[in-house]
Length: 329
Ligand code: SF4
Image 1: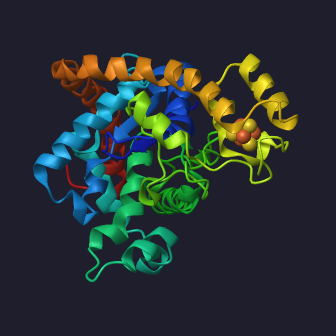
Image 2 (image 1 turned 30 degrees about the horizontal axis):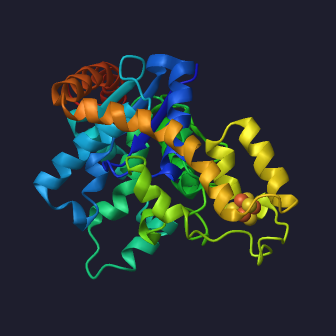
């Protein structure tokens, strides 16, 4: 059996790197596995970041994250989509797992070390983050976790936690594997300085209007070999070439490749040729987001149904876990 689980950060501020790298993959897995594709807006995890200590903002971001992912194609009728804090078993299983996990192992996590090094006072929750993540996944006995490669160490820890529980209390959990979306790391930032990322400020937002996107695309760096209009270039060495592969139809891609390599088109022409594909991809998402924004009950209703579906699975796992651990019932 395949069961997919992935956590989604509570932010409605998703960029095209998130869309092509993660959301599209969630949608595809949802079409393949239906209600065995489980997606959770991880508001409990968000609390490990001091920026989330703003109650109104956290509520709003959780709502927006749901709305934007629904608009981008994640269909709550088809998959299970819910908010982490609505299913309390995450915390309960997380606690049991903390008792099985050596502190030294958690202190070695790269993400922990990176984040902790920027803080004056490190919250214990930051150290426990990957344990809660293990609980998120194993609560549903998920065996497949679509994540970015930067999460690989946490998934390895999840396997370790599953093994430790199974060895201590008897076979209960699968050892999940991570799957990486085909183009998860390939969406370059608009500054051409590596991966698109919010912290680098080099993003194109999924909900950004076309004029604002054009203002970013127009001055974007291109293949440095094209110093003059008459110099041929290589679309494989240009971020606009990469964007064409994500947004444009085959006919346009052929024209861009040929035009660039023969200097038949200029970079501004090429950038203009990109925009129809961007519009075709993003405007329908933006229209669906606007419709959902006018109908917040649709979002709330979807999350309520999702939490009920998630709870039904989680309660079965916890009943088994509670028996195995020996809690007095
Ligand atoms: Fe990049 Fe297009 Fe210019 Fe080629 S023509 S260098 S792909 S912007």
